[in-house]
Length: 484
Image 1 (cartoon, rainbow, N blue to C red):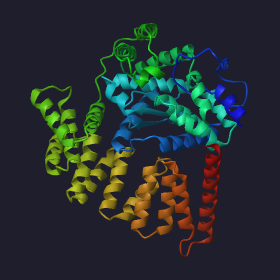
Image 2 (cartoon, helix red, strand yellow; image 1 turned 90 degrees about the vertical axis):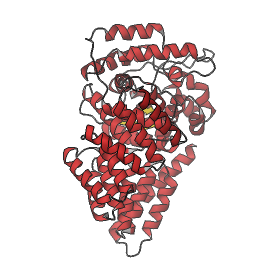
Image 3 (cartoon, rainbow, N blue to C red; image 1 turned 45 degrees about the vertical axis):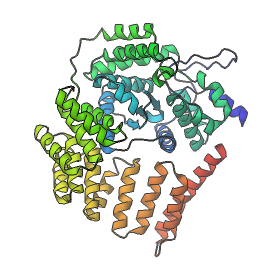
Image 4 (spheres, rainbow, N blue to C red; image 1 turned 90 degrees about the horizontal axis):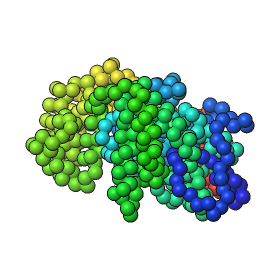
């Protein structure tokens, strides 16, 4: 087992750029590129990606606020459509962590930390980070890792890949050590992309930025700022610099490539400004302090975008449960930006809290006519319907929507609540099982299925489906426990 793990680590190249490494051991990685051996089929790749995300959710605090998820997916999808992967599905998500980093995993799962979002100065800089990670995927820099992992049992392969991703991106070997022991810490510094692969990701990322009408120079600009930070931080270097070393030559190379494209005056989308304001107010433990600071900024006129600053204040007011004042601010903002998803959904949530759920439901129904695919609007509609006690509407809506978000734990959690409200206990427990399963809590998923199996009057057909699902999850849990 130790030999196999050691061999596996030597042949895995997951993501990100070179770290300085020791030459004491001859543990050089093999050359990358498309191998002549077996390649994962799309179905296998997708299955590995799903298992990867279950492991990430189990170990990291994914930020599951629909508005944030909605925006980052929209931005990422826009970039993907202007890449070689146009038409393919990528999953973009945010990790609630102040560290400055991002990473890519199997099947186009790309995570970005809240700390990195708050560090960006423009939407083009955030797009640059995502475009860089997209390039690693489109250029198959992860292919060998997927192939190697594919030779292992699926749960173990996913845990291994997720552990390396979490360990590197979080600047810690804790995740690695948990899954694969002390070998990981020893070899962590050698799991990296070659300089050529990293420069290729820079080059293609810049091309994606230009094609998507973002400012290509945002990538070297972000590099330059991180390079300056490297000179300031002496005891604790930002994690971005640990996993994405920034040299003057790399910055110059990126600037040279970006200069081949015409300058683009890419204005920040209001959604990006709203996102930053939302995350900024979350940085305060006491929402009252956030309210005071946002008021100071508004009074002094020290803001990039007044509407975004007012939105940040409104979110802080909501956290402080000053709902009437928050509603007044939101009403004014909606008059300025009636099509804003952030404002529509936040206003509907406020109306629900203020006992005006029917009005909120109408607002969201209208929004769905214009934005039928919006994750935030769909989730808000189901939540308000449940709050109003209209479980039938909520469940029917979610059963249709699950086709588009079959791997989303929140959708299953809402379906469980709606089914429970209708007294459909069997279905409620089955949905809850999927909610826990997707979140990486296999023990809780098993418990829900065991309860479902004992449901009074359960049919032979339903019993067989529950039993089959139970056995599959129990096997995955046993494999995981053996691995750990």
